[in-house]
Length: 367
Image (cartoon, rainbow, N blue to C red; front, side):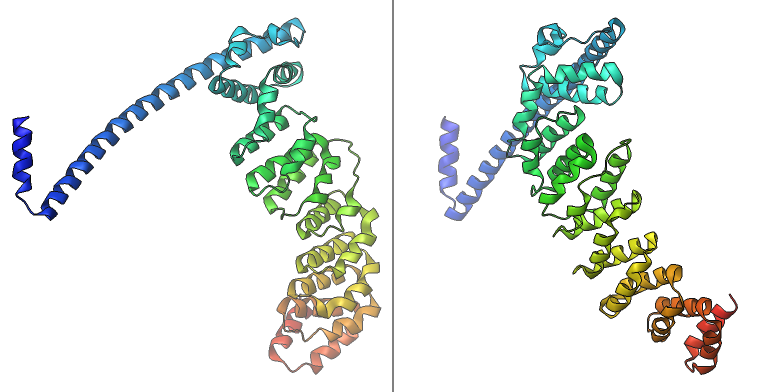
């Protein structure tokens, strides 16, 4: 006590500035020591938690596998929680254990099929895991909502569609994606109805995933496509055009031709490509009418179509675009003219004075 008093008296002889510096140093030292101790405690806690998770997960996986295979061998599917393994029932009342059990069930379900998968499905539906996943849909944390939706997708629970449709336009793309995949995975083409209410863009990756999922369904009735071609969401229209191409939906050719006048340039281009793919000659005159309003990609797509469906009546249109500044359009026009009218092609060789155009004509003439 005397020593502390001496120190205080000694420090008091220093200027105020030096005293403040000493107080700051002491304060920082104390904070650092407290932080070090706290970090060590946290690190120790996290290690214990990680060890517990690893051990418990291994235990649950063994219990699940043994239970599922036992039911499979006996040819029965138990539907009451009281019939499930004791380790599972005991863990359902602890939040961390419940999460580990659910993760293990999802992992195992992806590895088995048939009656074994049905056993896991029954366990999910007849325990509080179902309610636990449903509660996640109301969470304020986006990743919790996404996990809840994914659980229902994995276990193919169709009864929560009304709750999940609320997340179709969620601000987080991860939640939107899980909600959208839920409907496609569980309802196939019928599930695409969610696109009617979609206000956010569909990414290319989303569209690829949808097509992959839809391709896994066999003998499915394709329905609900026509209204989607008139969607105000241009990304939805682009996706439906892909569907029309993949599944050869010729019955919507009238709606596809109408999209040649769509306000979105990318939709017009994709509609032109689809018209060309289907070789819809009735769309040719429409395209010639709107040709000047198209961007470069649209004009190139028109001439690629012309290569497939052009005839003698299209010669004036082709000649009118021989001198187009775009190389691809100019090349396509010259190639089409050579195919349609050899005499006019020869006349063109003699009448053109532009050196670059002459080179293209010479190239086409001898190709």
